[in-house]
Amino acid sequence: MPLPIIEPTGTEYEDPLDLMDEIDELKKEKDATILAHFYVDGDIQDIADFAGDSLKLARDATQVETSTIVFCGVHFMAESAKILNRKKRVLLPDLNAGCSLAESCQYEPLKNYQEKLRAEGHDFLTVAYINTTAAVKSLCDWIVTSGNAREIIEKIPEDKEILFVPDQHLGRYLSEVTGRKMILWPGACMVHEVFSLQDLNRAKRNNPESQVIAHPECPQNILEVSDFIGGTEKMRQYVKSIEKPTTFLVATEAMMIHPLEKLAPQHTYVPVPGIITSTGETCACNRCPHMALNTLQKIRNCLRDGKPEIEWQPYFQKAYDVLERSLLQ
Ligand code: SF4
Image 1 (cartoon, protein in one colour):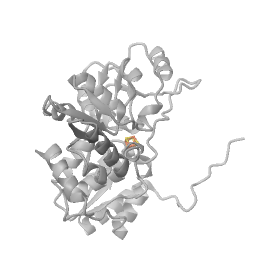
Image 2 (image 1 turned 60 degrees about the vertical axis):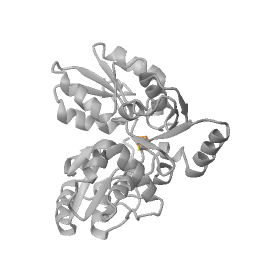
Image 3 (image 1 turned 90 degrees about the horizontal axis):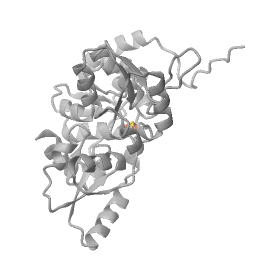
């Protein structure tokens, strides 16, 4: 007997097409622009005015002409949009959309650790991955994304040590490609950490001619067996550059497959881990639960109600200085 479908309590079903129409109307009425990260649902990416990775969206946010930005992503991204656009109203459809990586590095522990390193005689600069809170950004010298990290690290004088926060896997990868020694903060992303080598090897066996494309937030053992390593924008450019239809095993958040399919539909994309069913289908178990909190309903509601809003905080000014220098110059 089929199991009954239980609808989440408090959420009534609404037709996605009606919601899209309503969002379109509200956008005009409320003078709003929608930005969406590549990890949110494909429907949301499709209705967004700008879709992209963290670097592109931070830059896009500064080009917005409307008075309101709806940021479909997670909290630190909406914070960055507000920091770079103080005068605009920035809405986040669900304030609970956090990030395990940002949570792994908090303001006080980082400040204490920096003081300890200084007391021990370390002469270092702190480089933070953009997946950090604004408070943590205010303690840092440079902010990087997977799209510009290498370029920024290569600018840092050789006589300085580098404290890299919060992602140990990205830091280790960057240390390898730039040849710079780094002190690594022990953080990690809950989505990219779940890929197992066993799952990946099984997917490779099932797709013998395939290529593995992996995000540098993945652990080292996954990167070692990958054919291409890069952030989401670099992944897009890589698959676009290959004309011959190819099967790609994609080691990043499952929704990334949506923009890859749009840009290079000649290929087949298989999420890693792909649980192979008896019918040969695959199922993605690598969705970011925070990104998944963005829904069409919540976008409609936040446009209609003008909240939840990211309010300007006193420490945003310091975060602005470092973000502006790192991402916009
Ligand atoms: S995928 Fe990982 S790093 Fe990205 S928002 Fe989700 S928890 Fe954070």
